[in-house]
Length: 158
Ligand SMILES: [Zn+2]
Image 1 (cartoon, protein in one colour):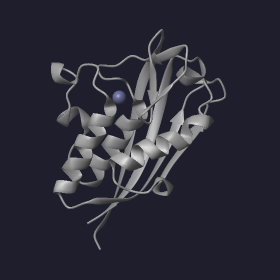
Image 2 (cartoon, protein in one colour; image 1 turned 90 degrees about the vertical axis):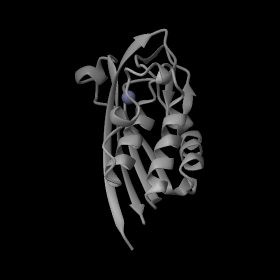
Image 3 (cartoon, protein in one colour; image 1 turned 45 degrees about the vertical axis):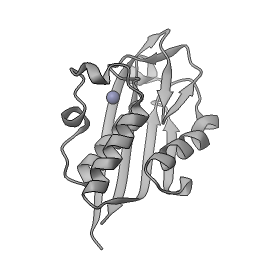
């Protein structure tokens, strides 16, 4: 069996009055991500991990933020398009492990919904998708609530 690992990371600035989308789920929050798309930092990191694992460049290459077609796009569509690309190369998802780093709001009650949303798109079981949350203990840009970071690792098989 051909097994491939991939990692992805994404950052977005936060601004008051914008929607906050994480892992395909809208989270009640004072601040949301500034982005060309809906700013779902977790799904963007996951797309990059999947593209990396299958040797297919990165999210900016496939879905450029200069293209009007992707303005305010639901990042679940970007994940679906990414999944279609890796499937065309014969890959399927073994498991996904993600971490979101932000100061607030607390997102633990939304983790199960994120696992369901992601697993449905990449055609695996929710148990194969882990989403973890942490803070930087008020240090740095995430600690000052200026931004959010997400990291994702994926294992694919062919
Ligand atoms: Zn992004």
